[in-house]
Length: 250
Image (cartoon, rainbow, N blue to C red; front, side, top):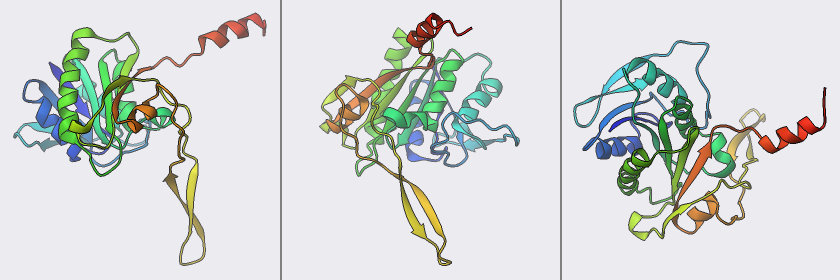
């Protein structure tokens, strides 16, 4: 299997390095990731400055690539420059911090997977919840098995998988749940501080505590399950299309 591996934490982050080491045992893996952390850039692309691609040496002596852009840039540029034929699968991760519910819209990890899907390539975004037990080894083994099943069985056009694990050792997991996207974990809090000159400034990132909704990605993590959510790229509201037509707005 030919796999493109990227992330939003940067090419040197342990999550992507461990996943590369696991996948490359049995698969042809190309690692092409940002040259530094690019978290929470969503589906952003670089338009007003050039992109540069630097060759790096991975643990097994093979070459990988560091790119001066966003995760979406990494997918787009890799498909243009590094592949004569498209890969069988694009994997974005393993990210440090879950990408669930509303927050997946801000995620660079998810943005990379979505970009691959735009290009007709099977893809998944993979994350582990922030905490004391980021079991990258366990998640890498799980993703290795999931990748084979995904390529063997496929997904509907325009759909990719958003995979999240709780911050516990994998031998403590309760199992896997197929989930929907939570709708009540919007982060809207800021921490207000004051600099030495008495001017206010703000740090974004305090998370509102969400009430678990049944069958959601957030609920699965709370109950120590891996969450797998199929995400559609087409965000058209077809029901409202019909209703608007009936209003005869012309």
